[in-house]
Length: 406
Image (cartoon, rainbow, N blue to C red; front, top):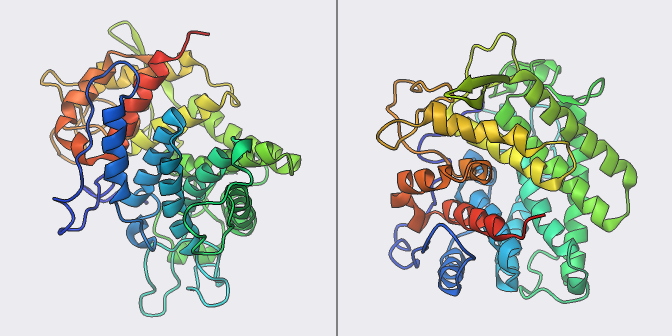
C-alpha cells in the first residue's frame, strides 16, 4: 500500500549548502490579512527552493517541491502577486517536462510507456509502477492553469521565463498547453485504469499485470482515501480548467461526476460519532465495513485537504456541517493534554509512535473550528520557518476568516 516515508512527506528539501542562505518564513500572528513583511519573506523563501526534476520517491506528488507548488498557488490566490505565479510556473513546467516520454520513457506495468510520472527507476528489467498518486501531479499542474484561466487579463501577456520548455509564450498559451497534455494522461491512464465505469468509483486495476507489479495494495480493491484525494485533485482541477475554457462540457460533467462519487463514498463510509457533545468522525484507511484499519493522522491529512478542496469549489454538496466533524476529531479525539496529537484519528498511537504534530492539510479544518488553529500553530511552531505549506495554510485560514460574511 502507498505509505508516506516518515519525515519526508511534508519536509522542505533544502540542499545542504543552501539551507543557511534561504530566508526563513515568518508568521506574525494568527489573525488579520497577510502582511507585506510576511509576503516578502514568503516570496524570498520560495524563490530559492529547487524545483524537482523527476518524480523519484514521489517528489512531484507529496515531496517538498510538490507541496511548495501548492503553497505558492494558495498564497497567490490570497494576494495576486504575479511574481508568485511565475514561481509556480517554474515548478509546474518542470513537472510536465518530467512526464514519461511515450517513445523513449520507462515501460510501466501496462506494458506501455504511459504518460505518467514513475516514482522509481526500473530494477532488473521489471516494469515501473504508476497508480493513483499520478492524479496529484496532474492536480498540481492544473492548479497553475486554473489560476491563469481565472484572469482574462493575463491572456496575451508573455510569461517572464522565456518559455524554456516551449509550452507557450503567453500565460494563456501555457495554461492551454497544460490542459491539453494533462487530458492525455487522464484519458490514457487515470480514467482507463483507476475509475470503475459502472459507478465512477476509484478501484485498483483488475489487470493481472498490476497485481504482479503494483506497490500499493491489492488489485480490484477500493483505492484508499488519501489516494482518492490525490485523484480528486486532478479530476477536480481539470474540470475547473475546462469550465473556465468553456471548451469541453462533457469532460466537465465526467470529471465532476468522478469527484462526486468519491466524496459521497467517503461520507457514506465514515461513521458519525459524538465525543463530549461534539460530532466527530471515525473512518478507516480505505472504504470498508465494518471499519477495522482506522486512518492515521498523516494519511488523514490528505483526506482533510482533498475534502476541503472539494468543499471550496461549491460543486459537490459538501456543507460546513459535514466538514466540522473532521476538525472536531482533531480537537476532541486526537488532541492530548500536553498539546500534541495522536498518530491515529481514533485517538490511539500509530505503530507505537508517541503523539506529535499534525500535517499541514489539517489546517484546512480550522475554518470549521477556529480554536484548532492556535493548537496546530503551537505544535508546529518549530517547523513553520522552513515550511511553505504550514505557512501558506496559516495565511489561508487568516484570509478566509477576514472575508466578509455572506
